[in-house]
Image 1 (cartoon, rainbow, N blue to C red):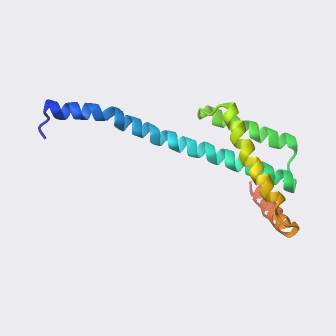
Image 2: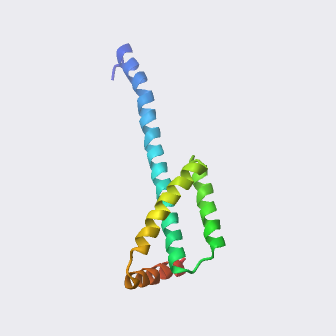
Length: 117
């Protein structure tokens, strides 16, 4: 392939765009991971509070671990708290809206899951 100055200039101009899109893809993946961690952590806390099986201290320790991990991925403490609280509240409301039978079945499943760990 014969490269002309025009082709080299075009390649040089496209490199920052390619690097930027790769960086954006990595950033998107990181954000998806952070979102998943917060979603699971907040849902598990709401479930644990509704179903029992964990002390407040254990739940707080787990939350702090998740918060530290998300901070290592670039999330601020305020952003973590906001996302966690929103997800937690939505999960809490959903669990509170369950019938007694649904909640009993839900809690049995959650306790089985927790025992596997």
